[in-house]
Length: 168
Image 1 (spheres, one colour):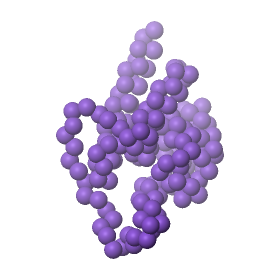
Image 2 (image 1 turned 90 degrees about the vertical axis):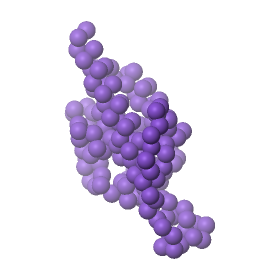
Image 3 (image 1 turned 135 degrees about the vertical axis):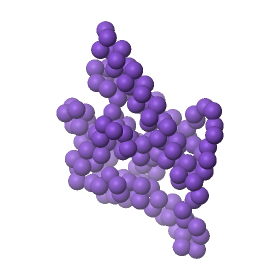
């Protein structure tokens, strides 16, 4: 019983770190609300290191994920005929003083999927690999396009995340 209580408290701490990290990543990129990609970036910074190890398992550099996200914006501008060199490509970081957390729909989907995932995995703490597994299952959006740009197969990444969780 005490083990489960400690696990719940640890999960609450991880969720708090994950959310605040996603908020910070969004703000750094000039956005007020985090989306799925910001939660992945936050997971890559969690101290458990499992999110980074998932990328390592498939021979991908987790540090390239941010560049792949930024490339999505450049590609989108190029597709409508706007040269990204002609405009300021790095948004100004914003200061966010909101009292309550809110996410974009893809960020909300990540958190809901994490909750569902944890319902079937109550004996293990919430880890960064859980976030990567959930994000890898997202078929559309910036995360899926960034992974594709990195040459990462989403199903292979999801399997690597499950393998990492099994070994953790």
